[in-house]
Image 1 (cartoon, rainbow, N blue to C red):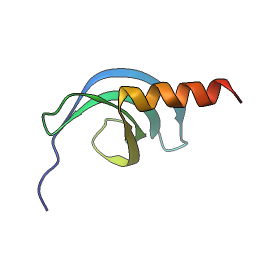
Image 2: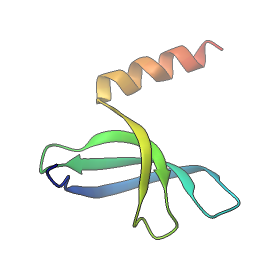
Image 3: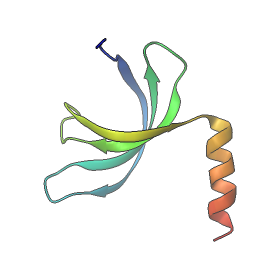
Length: 71
């Protein structure tokens, strides 16, 4: 399995923090040297480990924003 490289280019916000210190965050992340995308996932306290997440393009974030505005 090849190593996945990532760089958090901008931290946008923390949605929640678990009792063990893991945070659910929305960030802009560059995966494997590609253009940054919006990323929502859980992170260990020092970002040494990550949980499963979802990566969205700017267009997808705008569509999600529109949907959330309607609820």
